[in-house]
Length: 75
Image (cartoon, rainbow, N blue to C red):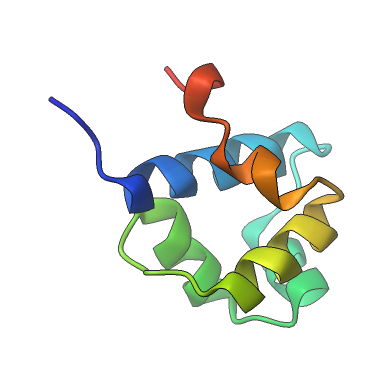
């Protein structure tokens, strides 16, 4: 079964977030100036994320935006 890009993107955001000293969704949301439930929706693959918010998330996670699309490390 293939996963859609929203689901893969959400898994990747979660993977990177947890690699940052188990950063909470709440802390990531605060750093991005986004709502915690929005981050949760992204990680569950139910949000279609805008380019502006991808940039905010990548800055908060201290990674390049392209790194959020590297799905090769997802199980």
